[in-house]
Image (cartoon, rainbow, N blue to C red; front, side, top):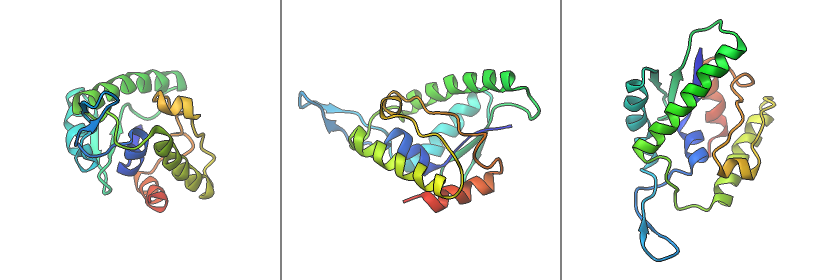
Length: 162
């Protein structure tokens, strides 16, 4: 079962990944921001593999992760997905991809919605999170709606990248 196929563009939109330059906070002190999005696969792959996940590198610089075998019940899939989500969050933290970028949450959300709108225009009835859920990192699981084939999913995201 292919769990999370995360294209680089999707990951950048989900997390607002920017450069690793510091940006000034409200108090004027430099705050760390996310690493360059070009490093996403190189940093996330070994972290997720260290937790036992099979990770494939995608042509756009993203990753594809298998978190369980095919043929599982929906409850088993949900359990494996929840475990994967915990590890994924840990890896985001370990690699620094959980840090904010230099764009505002509103700008980040507008870019995310634009990609979702494009995917819907291609015939996939995906669910877009509310702005509140987006900024809290709560995203609907659209994996059952999107193509299961990694190559078809890559082609879809390639059509909707900016």
